[in-house]
Length: 456
Ligand code: F6P
Ligand code: MG
Image 1 (cartoon, rainbow, N blue to C red):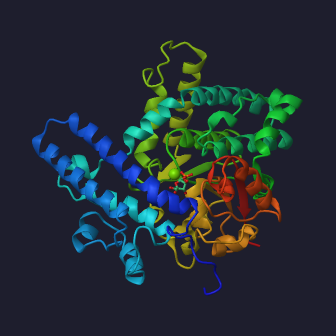
Image 2 (cartoon, rainbow, N blue to C red):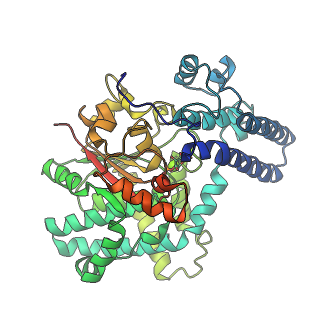
């Protein structure tokens, strides 16, 4: 549509997107090379080692393409076939033939980067490299480092079950718990995990608990949790309510999302949670289905979080959470799917018309979109004014029968839905410690938004 604002470009001077393209992307590719070399060191099959070296060379050349601002090239027919590259990429590149790494739409270029990396691995003949997750090492070590938050939340979960029993499905109590677990899932997306609190039901109700929540709540600039709650309650006594999660990162965030799912299932607010994962390694830490099984193993592997005492509170709490999740999975109350749509370059304005994804999401009573990239795709990563109403910024999804809730800690330039004056205030505030970068408060991960939409 002619009236839509254009998308952010990697050439938009002074934006976080331009910084990401010129500074962060070469580092990300270098990190892949470093981790690849570590992997090669562990191998003893000559053929696989050789292929590893070919991958290394190709990644090094690829890194230079970015640094030297090369043209974004189309995927070859061979690449498309062997690595199952969705056709949308070349279609886009046909329509944007002048695009170069540092002068192109940020959203497309970032997604294209991860696809190019994936193709380099998939083009090798050995199964080892075809299915290799070049981010696995980083995903695992980061999860390991969140040991403290993981144990704290597991203990929180253990307290939940008696709380639910005592509450006797009292709506006021359930609503407070819903808010708490939504916030756990929300802040699971932040790098700063210190905002999570281990609140008991007493705490939640006590002034102190309220205070603690209010503290993190003041960083939630838009909070539509109550609308989502009302919608979930409204769809009523209907048994078999379904909540979908369009997942973001594996590790701690996935763990927090499973925590929210477990709450919804235990409280019977939902009877089914459908998790949408990625079909390729993506955006460094995004969840693939195999990451779910790795996470379950990590939780129950005493050496992973180095909790030596099997009878410790932490160890018991981790095991009981993991076994509840496994039981939900076995009963198909938690299911996973990984449609290729989520790793194409298409934004979510494309979830419309006869899109199979639309048909799927329409079956859900609530679709939770996790994290920053999903927010960028929902809004098309466009240069909207920051006061643009949410429903306008997400286009078709606000009116085509999907009930959605976006849980986003702000990590990019695009920002909508703010009340008048707030952006100016926060820009001034951020400017104090970040001269010349005031508008980057939306890229800092320090603030968050919770945005709801449903068809009228
Ligand atoms: O590289 C930038 C980016 O794509 C931003 O959107 C965001 O900062 C990050 O990577 C991904 O964040 P998330 O995992 O929350 O989608
Ligand atoms: Mg991510």
